[in-house]
Image (tube, rainbow, N blue to C red; front, side, top):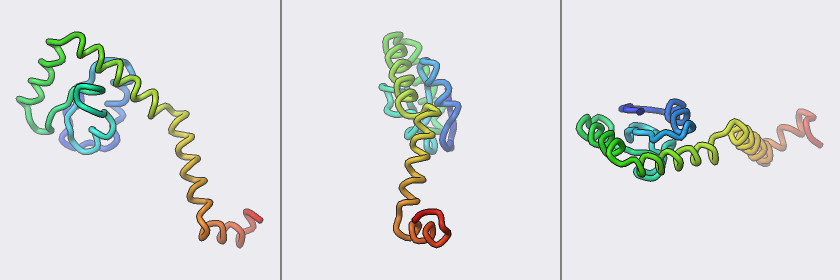
Length: 115
């Protein structure tokens, strides 16, 4: 469970999802961007809504099929988006994109880094 009011990129959410358990999380900060869609990859509720959080937990506890499906979908989301390999590939791609910009190519030429 990630009951945050404000959250950046949430490693605890990713780690929980990676295990295949059904994650309950709020919509605080960047959590929805990480966790995905309520009822598909996460059981979500409004940040700061204690009754909503309790209802969301009950929803998961009362429906084993939903729990299993959300857990599996959450794990798949992590594996498709946030493996260390994927992060490294995306980082390299961003560097290549920045380095290929005309202004940066000029600087690299002036510094003798490219011909």
